Amino acid sequence: MARGTEKRGAADALLLHGEERFLVDERARATLDQWGKDLVSDFGLDTMEGAGLAPARLQDAVLQAPFLDPYRVVHVRMVPANRAEGLAGAVQEIPSTTRLLMTVAGRIGPTNKLAKAVSAAGGQVIEMQHLKGRALGDWAARRAVDKHGLTPAIAAQVVRVVPPDLSIIDSELTKVAAYKASGAKLTNEVVSELLAGGREDEIFKLTDNLLPRPTPQALAIARNLTQGGMQPTSVAYRMARHYALVLEVKSKQERGESLSQVQDDMSEHRFVVQKAFDAAQNADAKRLEEALIKIRDYEWEVKSGQVDADLGLDVLLTRL
Image 1 (cartoon, one colour):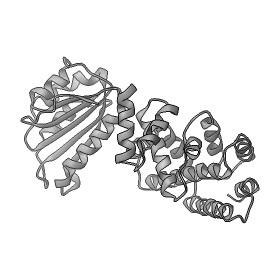
Image 2 (cartoon, helix red, strand yellow):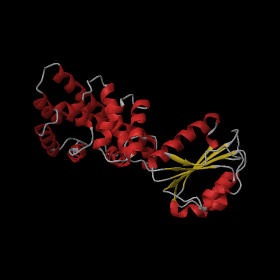
Image 3 (tube, one colour):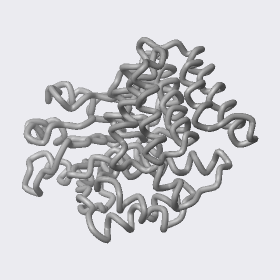
Image 4 (cartoon, one colour):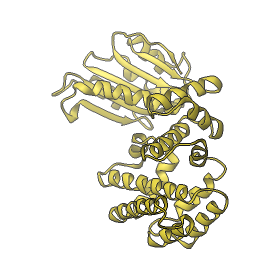
């Protein structure tokens, strides 16, 4: 939920802050997408990390005239809340040829000097409030329907079993939507198995032991999961998701993206992305692709009745 000044003032400036980091990041991405439509060169966007940013550096960026573009977009990411006031003097003047987007890591009050400076320049200051209770459920329902093509009932099921963290809720909705997109039948039982819950620690232990090759511990953890009632094909699905995530992160690493860039760009929880980022550094892209093919073949063999699901999972782990 956003709270703040939504007016359009004399300057195209937006300051986002609040406890809901996920909403801050999402609003920032949408704003950058909108502002970036008319940019024609790489010079049009200037992105700076808020931590350690000197006021003089920010002021120079704000006052700099565009080169090839109709305007410049200055993006300041995650200014520490306790250092926000120190940047107030840098935004006293925002030319019409600059669009300024600043995000703050945490909540700042209405009397904060940076907030007052942005407002005085004609910009917007918006607080992304922490969601809980009915507001959290309503957000999850809208997210499930609008972004993931799922039902409000599935959203309610997710909210009941995962921590009240928007990034985790969205990650779990993404997971369920991916399963649905595979063509598999989506029942309440399947959704329960897919969602992060009491067995998520075991899933993390399993994925930690998959690369560069599955360890004996991976086989033991997989057997423990199936003996505890989890379907072998669901275990294979979670393995496939991990391989696919590491492969995607690997491609971003090869393009020179940093961990923070990859985390900002992906919908999965930042901790999950960090684990994948670490695994991807020593992973081979070709082997990851081959692993996904082997898991796909295993699932087809199980569904077609060619192999026993439990024994097939053991064999699969020895072949990855």
